[in-house]
Length: 350
Image (cartoon, rainbow, N blue to C red; front, side):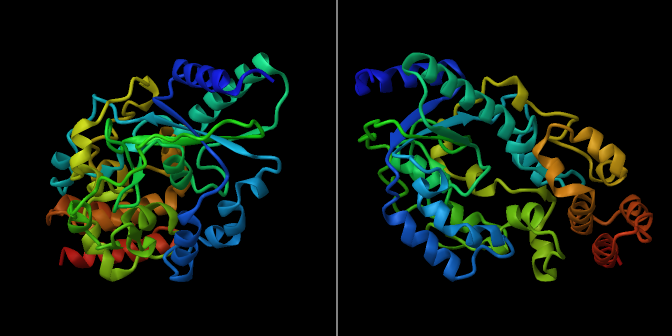
């Protein structure tokens, strides 16, 4: 095998040419993150995400997830487009729906996985066959822990990865390999949150129960995306008009003043999803939902949870007869879950 240091430099160059904005290298030792993750599970902060506990061993032991792994190539890709409506202008308009900015365009999972596969193919052409497996939020991987270890940044108090040069508006991906690549020794992983508590203070549902600890059961991203059952009544008024995810903790983070917008056209908003009208979205049939969310991360929640989330947002909207009329039309929906949330929303307007 060729000189490892030279190979690392080449991998970084190839990665950059494929559109990744930062590339780092680390071992399979996750250090402090193992204990943090297990403690998080013990506290039940994962809610109904049973898969987090079911595959806990694989998350904290990369070599067990993909046998033979000794090094991990960690990459990030900026995703915030320039051409999107200003977030607070949407959040503060109760007649509009807010969708987390990562989901405005094409589903990043497929896009990044294909790029990682191309990176692996390029490496293979250079050195011959080697063992690898690509991941983009698609398997039991502690991606933020891996990225921090690889020098891509540090995990902030809101539990997102932060980078001094670009903030937190980026996706992560990994290439598990059997290559003896030297780990990064950069200082990016040093914590630079200091005494700031902006993310903790802004969280609508107080989901950040302590610095660096998020109780998913209260997190709007969990409630609107991962949860498949009824949203707790006491949390519904706090969700506001956020129908898919939440970005508040990122929007107030001082480090995001250094954000770098994406160059990927696929991440630009589709179907006016950066500032959509609640009533219009609520009128989508299941067929329309599937058609309009084709190739989008939004599709994974399904039409039923889509209507559930919008019903909650409409319940929180300013009182208006058009809102009441739209909700009333869904009172006889086939789904008990939808009917329950529609009924709650109507009660907020009486």
